[in-house]
Image 1 (cartoon, rainbow, N blue to C red):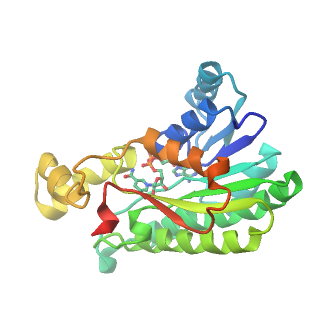
Image 2: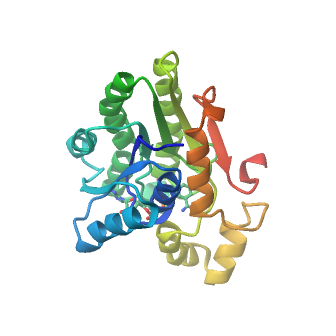
Length: 256
Ligand code: NAD
């Protein structure tokens, strides 16, 4: 049901972004996938997605920590019916030891990039008379954890940006929503395990069970396909009146 639409997904050469790309393409959307690298594997990934799903896929390099590159990504895409702001990074440290450059990078990539891409995409959506903005926030857009100051601030911020986007587009057949995943086992989570092992003085298994999945009453990681399926649902007619809200895919985390 998404054939003829183009979905631009930031940070989509791995993890959740790639999972969303697969589900959008399965539903028939053409894709623009993105990361900050320009490796042969990035272009090969675009080709394999196109071959697997029978849709058009372009890889466009753009660094989401740079405002002008965020804007250039949407301009180069030329069309953006569905914008998925997914690129994100993490750093774990107490506030008084949090490196300033990490704070700046997290705010830029996890929050400001969505402002820049949305600013350029909305006029395209208005011209097309339809649009979907899907922001990948987090359970940390609704709840806090210690040692994640920049991430929690950025994710709460993107939930706020989502609400404003929804209000400004409410009468234009454009919706804006945020998906709030709990823990999904992707590279961003893999990279946190050694730090958490050090911080909590625990084994890998204990960090997964006692620190990460302890928050997730289901006791299971969410999957990238589940996040992708939720994003596709937000693009369906059933979701026409869902705007300015959050959908948690977190195994019950935020019910607590
Ligand atoms: P990931 O590390 O696998 O993917 C991050 C993606 O962003 C990669 O494709 C990477 O290339 C890209 N990226 C990083 N810096 C970039 C930059 N400067 N410019 C362009 N692209 C850049 O992590 P993930 O788990 O797939 O995370 C995707 C999103 O989901 C993030 O916003 C993350 O905060 C959010 N999220 C993840 C989890 C989880 O448990 N994995 C939970 C909640 C929210």
